[in-house]
Image (tube, helix red, strand yellow):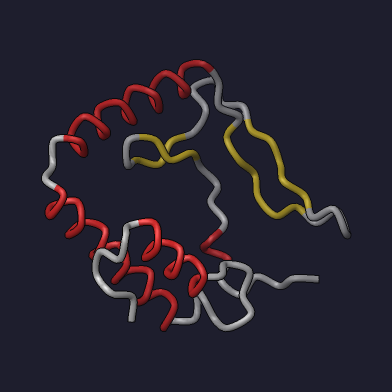
Length: 119
C-alpha cells in the first residue's frame, strides 16, 4: 500500500479564487482508503454556489492571463517550475513517488515548445 509521507498534500477544503473555502451549506464528505477503510480526508461537499464562484474566478483569471505577452506568461511558468523543483528537492517528488515530477517537467517542456530548458 502507498504511504503518503507528506500529509499536507491532502487538502480538507475547496480552493476557489486563491482562497480556502468550504461548502456554503456546511456539507462534507469523507474519502476513504478502499483497502482498509481508513478515512484519508473530510472535504466540503460543494454545490451550485461554489461552482458559480469557481467559474467566475476562472473566467476572470483567464481574462488577465490572455492579456499577458508570451514572454510574461513564460516568466510565470518558469517561476512555477522553480517551485516544483524546490518541492522535488525537499522530498515531495522523490524517485518512485506517485507524482512523477520528472515526467511532468519533461511534458511541460515539450508542450511549451521548449520554452526555457528543463534542467
